Image 1 (cartoon, one colour):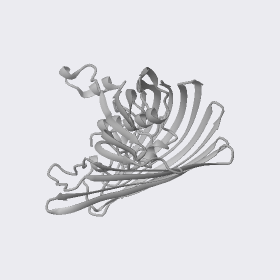
Image 2: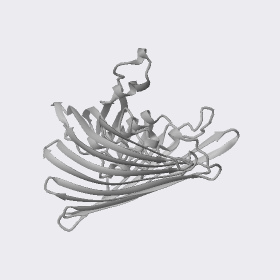
Image 3: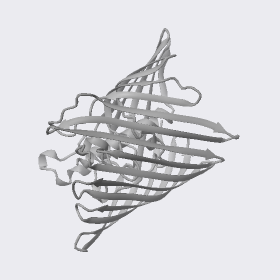
Image 4: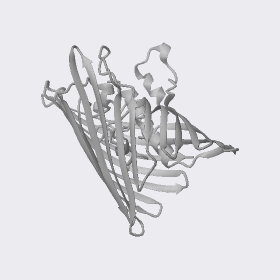
Length: 388
């Protein structure tokens, strides 16, 4: 598994979701039914991780590592164009992410590779056409399966898990949030996605997407299909709730055999008077528990599931979060069985508009039978997030 690429692109999703739904973009031009704006995010954390590892013979190894690095979100800048053409609105978005830890990749580099490795990653490049009939997204964007699970993570602005099993403690990019400890990450995909106009609190989207190759020689006669259904409403004076359901299906031919990959995810959130409770989960076949088809052969015998529960309380400019999540993967055709979990507590303080301070503690556990490793990683992180 390319853990560095996964870690960097995984948070690209979180960043894109944050910028699309939370950031206040700066308008650069607005005239004649056209506008151009930009938005961005910069974050940095001091973290200290203590790792205890036990192998199959009972031997233990302990170490600790301090870092100055990014959290779950990458540093990014995005550009947005909007135009009104008759009864159709056209929106275009492109966004770019960079790592502040690219020089850390030079630990084992040859002399010719020394220096800053510019990890500029384009994860969104799409246009949407919107009318009374709904909208169509054309281009490169993130998938729908487990999308809302990630969007609803209360640690989106925080640090999350940094299991040493995935190489995250020493990695040159980002932490993982609750990827592999409650939900899977969906990579950006070339797609054509239709979304109905929001009606009575319901929002539905379905997309055909470029298939994820389970193997270089696999054959996919049909595209990957993903869908998402959301419902949101308000109650009382300050109360609100939402629920969502997502799914994915793909079929591949490999070695004369048909492999079917599919999954379902969902969850809900209820908030009132500053108190918020979120619960989400997923179950899948042939997808894995980290990143779906992108990093695991889509064998039908692979079963994965996970869940995430979080309780948050907001008081004025302060937000407190308790979180626990876990994911498991079982392969009935081999010894590939694993369980990953993360428990944490976090404090967020809005210092100014667009400036948030974060203090967080996470305890991550990994039990992987095929590599006969049991690991516990305890991470304390202090950081700041700046958005515009």
